[in-house]
Length: 416
Image 1 (cartoon, rainbow, N blue to C red):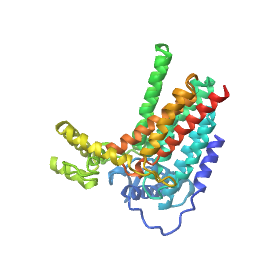
Image 2: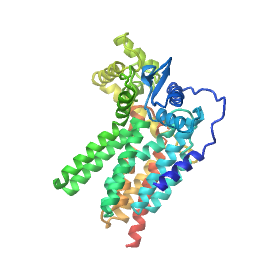
Image 3: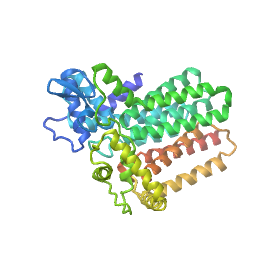
Image 4: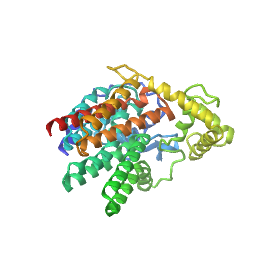
């Protein structure tokens, strides 16, 4: 707990305090976050907007996006008695990144993977990569938080960790996944998939005698992922509010649909919110942007295109994959991502199947497995949605984690 408090203090000390008279952010959801924080300052109520003499859910005014930033800004305003400013959004993004990296490094130290932990901490250089006032710069910390649970599930049994250590990290992993879901539910999906894979591996290794604990773990993963929904429903009950008119979670369908339009395509789709709005208007002009009916309509449109034009969709995604592999990693590397992918993949095969081939499975294998999964997740996200580096820059940290796991495997081979 003391280490976590120190991590929080470090994270928020790395950005200067907000200045007065800052211009409002361009991102609509960010403006709603600040509006909600002002309401929390006045009323002590969170995830709501003050309208006249009453409070309403954020989603009654407009699509509110994931609730993490609004909740954090509201807590900041209510606890400090200060109005939140746009630069506080940047402080939160940086704080998430630093805290996520430190927690992941602490788990790696627990797993006796010192080289991996050191390389993960080097990724703090990426923590301020994109100083823009949207949720995307916090993607690095979100990914780290979502990776803690699967790494703990796979790695701790391999070092024969005590029951107390295992339970402690299991709880930390579930809370981290819930936090990641609050701030970016699309990234938390990666944690759900990775945790499910880790549980499946554990079941395959330990057999059916431990099936009930693994079912409990899966239920905990599901509850953690649903944290945004649970927080909103708790708000509605606490403040006696009706559910919001607009969706208050990110959801995949809008992004999946307009993701077909990142490059030139035969469907006339553009990477633009307006393109999704136009598609829904053609279905039913009465459907409003951001409502549950809007996302249901785009879900139907996306699958209609996929099922009626599968060849063209595959061509679109193949083109996006090529564009993804040619994207340059952030500073200081500035090299197309395909070269680090090839080199790290080759290094992993050489180390595991030649240098460390006599080693039994150990925690470094768990770290390499998680790093490989997340690398694939970010490539898949780039292909399905958008390959701009602002969305996929956390892949650099997972490549470093894979390198660290290879070096830890080599070190263990030499020491045995």
